[in-house]
Image (cartoon, rainbow, N blue to C red; front, side, top):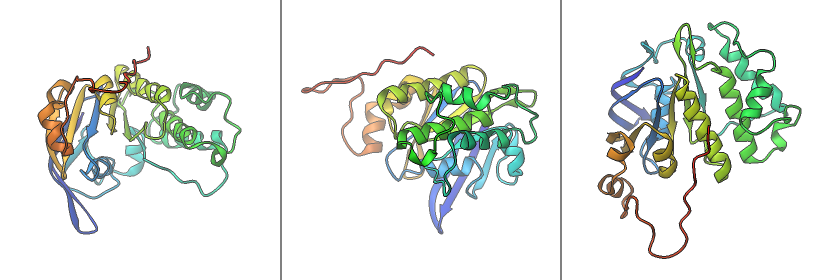
Length: 263
């Protein structure tokens, strides 16, 4: 269980998050949504131990702040918005970085020696292992790092309990087909007993794949709960500062509705 209470955080001395309370359970996908500047990424950074905070944030009973990074790496993996590499690593070398992090304190994963290749296949990059990461497209690089994260916590549940994926805008650089693939992976991970917490901008994908949605506005929790409870005309119009109608097609022009892939 992820349990957050009274969490506040600042950046460069400026308060960003104010008294956040949130719960996320293993076996579920939790989407953190809200307008630009609402504090979504800052909240994820606090929840993963990358940013100091006041209050409490416990993951599997461990206070995130103060728990050794090695121990946290054994139970959760983090996909940042962007990861820059200064050297020409191959795809396989990048993915194996996740394997190194994942075995710390958790034993050798049961995925076997071909685990990196299996992870690449799962994200649609089978056969890419020998390629230079820096020569890939932005979307391909994003999926390489997703494979790295998957390898780190490949088994959603171990003897030590559930494991977690923390994803910051995991579909931002992807086309619609790969967006559905990535969200399907997140859904499958949760269905297998792991926990997923994802910062999202796409409200339609959030509604399709998330069990729980946390809507932030100005660093405060505006609403949280099941998608139907949070994604309402009133909540979204207030959060985004424009008129929003849920489940209503536009008066003119085409309307694209992606269909979830079978997982």
